[in-house]
Image (cartoon, rainbow, N blue to C red; front, top):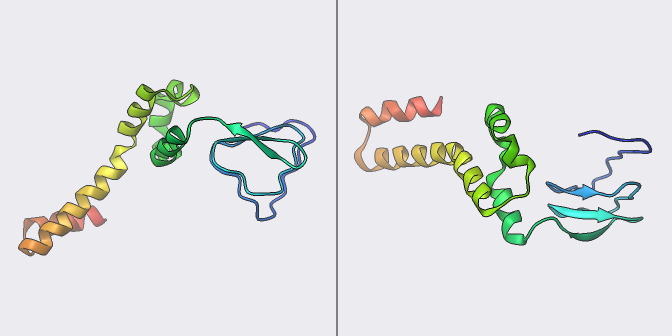
Length: 128
């Protein structure tokens, strides 16, 4: 991100959502919704960048939490307008975190049902 001239950033309890675009010389006085485009004095919502469905998918994917190497490898997708195919691809890339949580849950369920055994060692290694 780069900042041009005549920019003043002041933190006064205002939340700027994910993916927000703010027009030049705008004055932000209220919280800004995710993926909105705002401009003016005070800044007002002009429109959303994407449909609500696409916004919800992007918020669920949380690409900014992905490993840096995945972001670099997929920068073309991330820099382009989201399409159904690109969102599916990003959802698949973001699964390792979800898979880890699901696997951990499965091991805990197994322990609850069958007691400690080999799966206990597996659960301990997952929690490290």
